[in-house]
Length: 402
Image 1 (cartoon, rainbow, N blue to C red):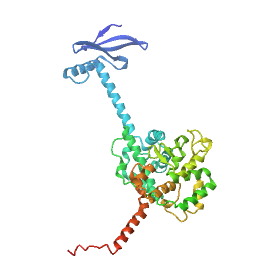
Image 2 (image 1 turned 90 degrees about the vertical axis):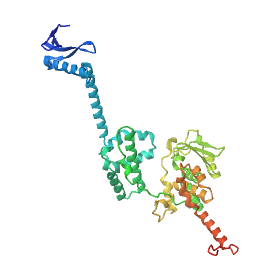
Image 3 (image 1 turned 120 degrees about the horizontal axis):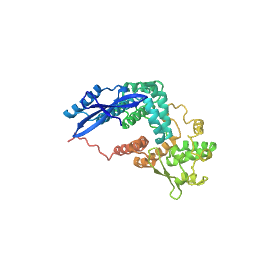
Image 4 (image 1 turned 90 degrees about the horizontal axis):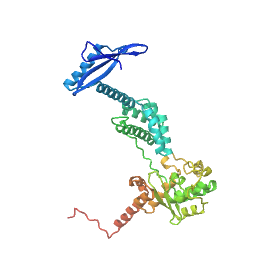
């Protein structure tokens, strides 16, 4: 090690060394802190250091030590500077995250996770709503800049395009979920602007259900066109299964002894049991059974069926069930079969709680849409009362006679 050379500044020294082909001075300082003598290097003269600067750095450390504030050593100072630098980097990173646009969060973080967690129908709908309605209005905005009036504009654009209130409700729900996701993951702080927007509500209750005659006509026509579609339609009419539940049904889910079906991962997220009528049981019994893991209703190559065949709508059109009907709630679609099953149950006196359990609804509120079917029962009750009070032996008491 080269010899330490004193300077005119107390505690400041340097050593001469060969550096980059020529001699250079490396400045060091010596001082006592907490009773211990320390020697720490500062830097090269070729990098701008000189004895005076070294002395100023030493005096700063001595001052910090005397007043009990700030770093007492160069190591402490470097550590504090590094921590400050890292804190600044973290702050800039947080700002960058906070300035991520809605589109960036949706496309790079939220939607990839949604693809893994949600059903394909839901993610397809979210992607469509984002591409067509959400991104054009708020896609380029950081979350903190999104205001309720932006969302009102989305609602208005969708209404002007003739879309249903239910579709606008889905769009706002998507926005709410993305922002809540950002809040949970530290990408956004503040109130969700969706909470300040009135959510459009629509009465989507399907009012139409098939009569027995219409059901027979539909099944006959389907049987003539497509055997698989006929079996699915009959099974829905006799068990209330959704189309998706039938497409996901495997032979291992069918219990022929108890005449029951196990429905897994249903729309409500619960596994439930469905009960077969004699006709529903017979349909499955006569089908060509395969291994427990095979789908009951198979698509090409034994894969799960896609959406319900367009043949169903063609048959409905040929039967003129929807002729002259513009209200979508009154139109016959495949889901009408599940609705018909529930409506027939209520019409024949089955209470709504039992219907709720048979359909697998999460709450009785959903099942109450079928309460109107009981109007005939209520009307009969009123007529019975009406007949009773019309009898001469029943005397109506005038409360004012006393």
